[in-house]
Image (cartoon, rainbow, N blue to C red; front, side, top):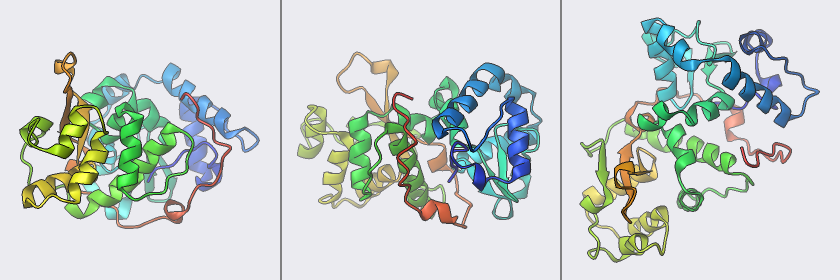
Length: 283
């Protein structure tokens, strides 16, 4: 998974860190607080880099590489990726933090997640922040993850990490042909007691799906529930029906529709972060 540059300067090759600082016109130091580093990077991205202009001026190869790494949950290893999709040299948002290892740091993914284009295209990293907190808490509990973080962005990142692992065995495939569908097309109001709890606002969606997964016997519906659990399809507000009570639909995520190529696991990905200094309240 990608990681924050903030607080992790020692993980990044010095030449890559210098290049990143030059690209964004900032100076990062281990003497700075982690939160200070985060805001330095965020502010530079917001005020000095027009990503739309950069995307449109990229070569075709570089643009494909950028979209590829986004589909791979924000990081790839050169030796484990299709060679025609790893042209990253002129993209300031991608950092080769270790030889042959490329990522879009979380500071930049956080910035991209608020941009309309990534929400509309249904990138998982952009949809997670839109999900109500109660839904994310129900989802992480369904995944049997003992999350102890204090802040919502930490929860988003923990989900993002776990969903990549769950999605990998699917190789981007599913039995569901539609790119989006309403909940009512599978569970009509009044026909399923557990889903009716959600429709009436008594429970969260992911809690209801968790309960349903314990008793559902239909093979196709069990498959639907599992791909929702893995984040291949995700709950999204239907803006066309915002005045109605049932204003959510399920959409196929870009990451969930893509084969995940990386096989290697880095040590930091298996370690629990016990650092309480990194306080992202209201970010």
